[in-house]
Image 1 (cartoon, helix red, strand yellow):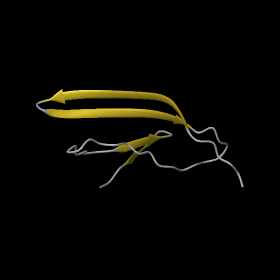
Image 2 (image 1 turned 30 degrees about the vertical axis):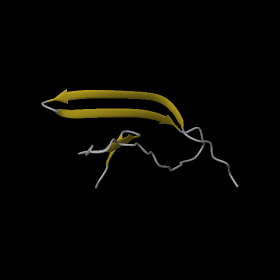
Image 3 (image 1 turned 60 degrees about the vertical axis):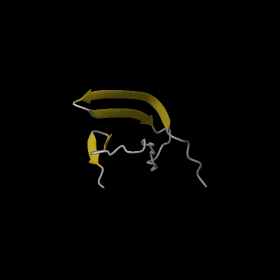
Image 4 (image 1 turned 180 degrees about the vertical axis):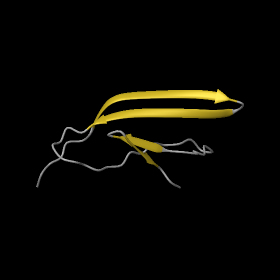
Length: 69
């Protein structure tokens, strides 16, 4: 069985902007796949109680993938 290496975190950037009591948080995480093949996985981000996200998207290889609820 082929053993796959975990993705490597090569960069993290977080930004917070508050306007009229509305907070906008942007989190960018850059991952590198050290394997010679395509891999899939999950990215889990804990949210504080009461926080309600209004959008979520993943950018991969120049394509934007929108999250849905």
